[in-house]
View 1 (tube, rainbow, N blue to C red):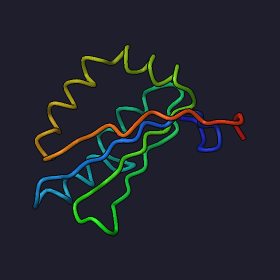
View 2 (view 1 turned 90 degrees about the horizontal axis):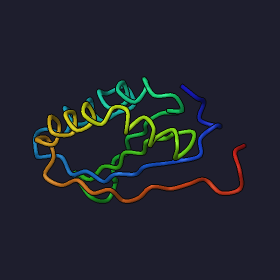
View 3 (view 1 turned 180 degrees about the vertical axis):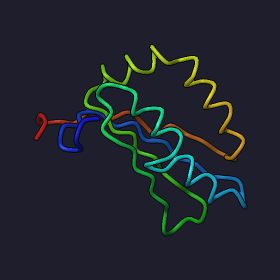
Length: 110
């Protein structure tokens, strides 16, 4: 796993877990959850952050951090079947899921 200072690419998702499943959602989607453990197998993975909106109850963002777009895409292509399987398995916890965007770092890496 790369360090946070080496990141170059972010994928940001918005989630609204079903009522009563917030704790389970936080465990699955947090920095040590099932998704983060899955991504850790990928070269160029830098980490996952899970944040909760302080103004809108039940709204979360996940931020998956990668060294580069290429590293993420290579990992996803190589592990697409398992990625889709995990997605199907855990989507039951959420009432809404939206990809907010995929972002590249500007100005080079620090």
